[in-house]
Amino acid sequence: MTTTEDEQQLGNSTTGYVPIFSGSKADYDSFKEDIDDWEFSTKIPKETRAARLILVQIEQVKKIMRTVPKEQRRTANGVSLIMKEMDKKYLQSPANTSNSKFETFNSMYRLKGETTESFILKYELAYDDLVKADPEVKCSERLLTLNALAHLEVDQKDKHYPSHEGVDYACHRGLCGEPLRQG
Image (cartoon, rainbow, N blue to C red; front, side):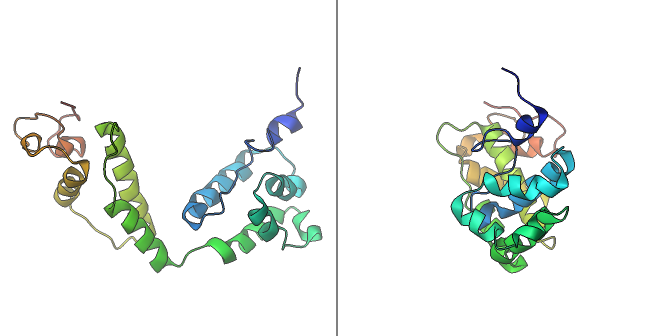
């Protein structure tokens, strides 16, 4: 069975190509970025994008999006108008965003069974999110390395840098010029 281009753009109503928002303030920044990417890449006509966006959302989100009058939603600016309404409900103040990102970053620990590489990537992304939310946050590479080691929960014997035994996060951050290795 073949599908039309229109059906391919909409995708499945629950997991389709149109970004779906969880309704959580913590996910809103990511949702906004997904919307920007979707608007840039979709071939859905601008006048119908808002309707397509609304249809895949959870009820709570649909209600907020539908506070924009139907006539305005069905214009080339419909998605933009919806996102302005969403911003009113979900956009956090810079102070709250910064605090939230710091708490996420500072409370990270490697989960049982999680690889070192996976944890370090999540750790770096959380730090990047923190700096994006609050550009005044500054952390030396050394402090970042020490904090990562503390949160990685590596045995003390594996933390010494010269021998490169176990995980050497300093190497991964480019401090010694050698690639990350796992013990």
